[in-house]
Image (cartoon, rainbow, N blue to C red; front, side, top):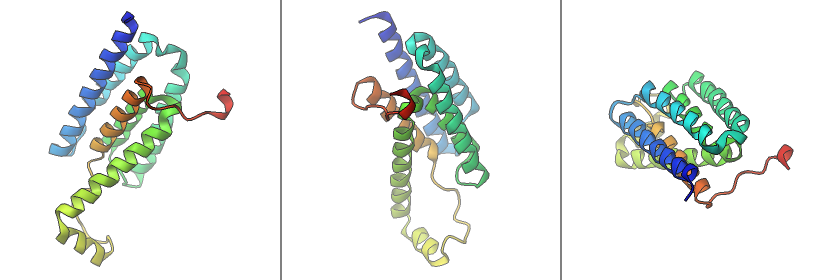
Length: 172
């Protein structure tokens, strides 16, 4: 196996570990450390140097789109600032072609986590339905977990050839 392939797999493993760290701290303290996001950015530099440089423009565009959407979600209190930053850093690795898969996988994982959380506390779910979401029900879904699931699934799926990128009309 060529050395650059070994490097990409090692960086992908580091990416997965950093997302696991971010997800764990999000569950425990409901905070995603800035150090986790900065570590992902550092790993992305190595990722780009390990042969992804040809698609650096679309990768940066994916990160920019993810950050802009994440900021809008943060502004409307749909997700936290750490979640928005983590999603943008994760999108750098998946790139523009896999951004729809990352978004869909993250949303689906978040939905499953929310359903499990509601099923675990049926009284809370009943109160939310009765009050139609107008009460204070505590903090919502730890989206760091959903982002980690989406990021690991998409990156490894793409690397192992199990996912194909969304075809971009201008790239044909």
